[in-house]
Length: 226
Image (cartoon, rainbow, N blue to C red):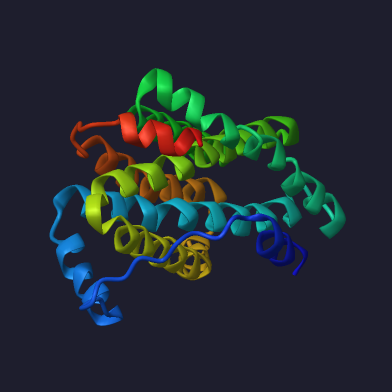
């Protein structure tokens, strides 16, 4: 509520330009055009697994830490989860990385970090190493999210608004699926196998990102930096 008030009072109001024949249905019809673009479809695959893996990881981690290997209390588990905030602090620097490496390279780098961190978590019974791998995972996600938003905006072109809206829907659809996915994977009875399967889901996103071809990135770099 406080944030809404600040936005209402401080953000400048933009001018709304509408053509004579503009309607909400016309905008919705652009979804079909957006989904026909192969690069955007690949971007949406990445979006689906991105926060899905994030929510799934923390769901599994809570169960793992409360189990016999660690036996942590709910308060201690909260501290471990809170450590992930350190990884999120890298997100504002994604723009600088994009200027140097390009948005696609930063996206792939972030996804690779997340895959490695997630895959390694099941191998460690040392709490410090487990937290370190979770930080690597969160850092990768924190770098990937703004890079993917910028890339979707670039690929969307004149249909940027609809492209980003579809991206947002798919992103949060992934978070809704995550708890179901976590429960199914944990039925394997092995946390090692569970973390590995979650990392393989994220590998699908990394593979999709590798197939998103090169394009003009100057506009993207400007948007993500701003």
